[in-house]
Picture 1: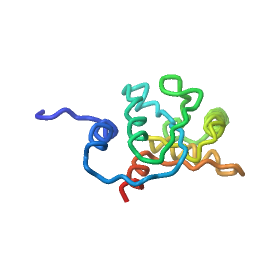
Picture 2: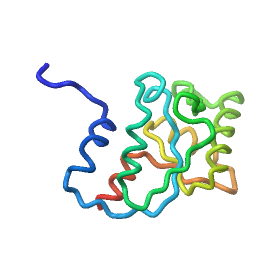
Picture 3: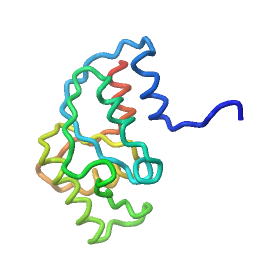
Length: 140
């Protein structure tokens, strides 16, 4: 191949700051959910954090368990949420809320869907967004 395939977050982390795009502020305190496939499988831990650091106004607050020690969202391959997986999801949400972040950012649609579903009945919810949506907010 005449090019090396890279993950979208590698591309954004490498180009976003020097792209000439005028990134507007996104005034939010965020925490990051390291997806299993992105982190433990692909070894991409710093790229999402670099993207968050590039966007003006974002303040990253790490959860106690992050990067290689991050808890899985327990999406169980798109199957139904069983008691065990629900317990893990609620534990991860509790850890995210303990940071007092406004938003839980992830780079995995499974994490986003399953963690959102897990907090449906909670009175105290944390906003959950995909990192590409944060980039889009900063661009627009």
